[in-house]
Length: 143
Image (cartoon, rainbow, N blue to C red):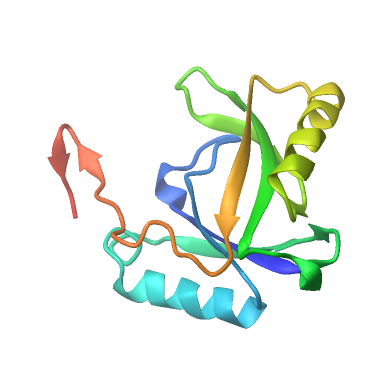
């Protein structure tokens, strides 16, 4: 089991769209929670707005302890709404190899009707969005 940290800006979320930032995949739930608290207190954008976080438990297909790298892969599918925002997102469990994820892609495509698909590589413990974000209003930064 691994833990995916997702931060959300609820002020920019609406209807069935959520303004999510995938921060990283971690070995422990405590590690993910500590990083979430750090981002919400210290990282530009996340500390400037009332962002929230959630930690998603991610199963790993195969023997995690016999993996040969710090990378895992997932399959993700989504639709887009009239504003081109990603909605109806579905995700696979984590796979030990890219080949396993590539093999899962047609299975998920057959099972779920989505407009877009990707196979994503994750480095366990790596942080995304380290520089944070700037929210723009009428072409001007507001944080």
